[in-house]
Every structure is written in structure tokens, then in C-alpha cells.
Image (cartoon, rainbow, N blue to C red; front, side):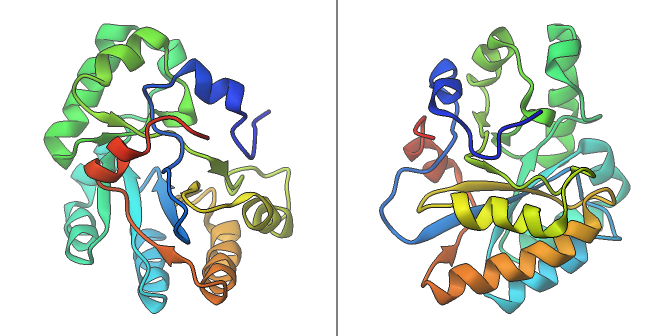
Length: 214
């Protein structure tokens, strides 16, 4: 079970983390977790390019090591790269020392100040420690593109009906999400472009400005 739109009571539990960017401007932040992989990430970059859109890619360290050229391509295209641990660890099930070492290992490969915990599962003690060294980014909207129990149409509806200025939206550039992503992403870009929205990548300064507020 998961929330499509992050309830305020959850963001209130972790006010030091970033859930949404505070702005009245028509701008949203598309994020992509679990890549980069050659089967999906280049397609995402090409689709974003068609709309002059930028995204933030929270990369699994082992994928970044396996496909360093994709990380380079992301940066050269003007996207932002974030840390998603080296082995996609579940913080709830991982000893803190092991978790921190894994994050640091990914950091050596990715060289970024942005971090997102896989599954959004992070202990308060982990969040407190990592927040000293990284800008921890959660989300406002979870598309559900990873969920085999929902249709691609429902996935699209999740995003279109819940997004507002400053929303941080989660997609996945992974094989598991590929079919839904290929349906949903162009339609999201079409819909919000027609409404005058911009699609920007997250930066350290934007994240600092967006503390709390889901």
C-alpha cells in the first residue's frame, strides 16, 4: 500500500526532508528513480528533450558504475543526478552503519548532494545523519508506474489529478515501469505544457527552499 499524494501528517514526521518545492509559479519537478539503464533512460532523455524539460535522476550506484556514459549524458543534457544508494537498500531493513556505507559508496560514483531513499523507507536516525551531508528529497506525488496492479490510465490519472505548482513527482526509469512510463510521461508533458507549466530539475538551492510542505 502506498499514498499517491503524500499526506501532510507524513511530511510532518520528517520536516527536515524535502517533499515539495514552495512556489506559486507553474513549475513541477519530474524525478526518475532506479536507473540509469540503456533500455529506458535514453528514451526518457529524448522525451524530455522534445518538451525542453529537465528532470532529476536518482541513480542506483551499481547502475551508474555499470553505465557511466549514461550518467555523463544526463549531466550533459542539463539534468540533475541524485544518489539512490549503491544497491537500492531498504533503510527500514538495513543496519545504519551498512546503510551509510552504501550511500557513501554511491556518492563516490555519482558526486551529488541530492539523496533519495529507495522505497522512501528511511529511519529517523538515518534521516538525521544523512541530512547533515546530503539534501534528502522525498516526493509529493507517487505515480505508481512500478505497480503491476494498476493500469497505465490510472497511473496517468494519479499524476494529472494530484499535481500542483512545486510538486515533486516520482517515476522510474526501470524495466519494471517501462510500459507505464512510455504511456504516461509524454501525456504528462503534453498536459502540463498546455497549461503553461515548466519542468525543472532539482538543485541544492531549490531543495533548500523547499523544506517540508507536501
